[in-house]
Image (spheres, rainbow, N blue to C red):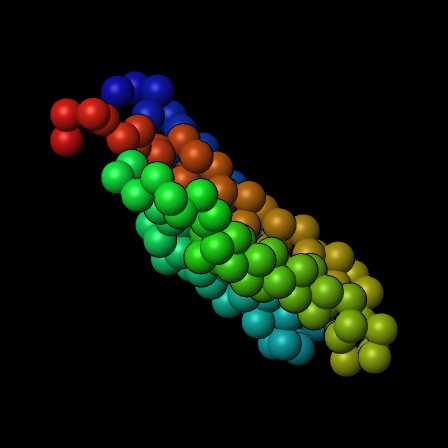
Length: 130
C-alpha cells in the first residue's frame, strides 16, 4: 500500500507541475490561448478509454479485428498531435510567444504523461473469477 501512495503523490506532483507550466505560459505573457492545450490533453485519453471496451470478447471467436479499439486509438492520437501542434501553430502565426509555446508543450506533455502513467500504474488486471 505504501508503494501505491508514493505513486499517487509523485503523479499528483508531476500533474501539478504540468498545469503550473501551462498556466504560467498563459499568465506571463498575458495571452490565455495556450490554456486550450490543457483542455486538449485532459480530453485526449477519453476516446481510448471509451472504445477500449468495444473489442471482441472471449466468446466471439469469429471477430478477430478490433475496429472500434483501433478507431479509439486513432482519435486519441489525433487529439494528442493537435495538443502538440496547436502551440506551434500559434507561435508561428505570432499569436503567442515562442517561450509560451515551449512551456505549453512541456506542460501538456507532463499532463498527458501523468494521465498515461496513472492509468498504467493502476490498471486492474482482469481475473478469470470475476
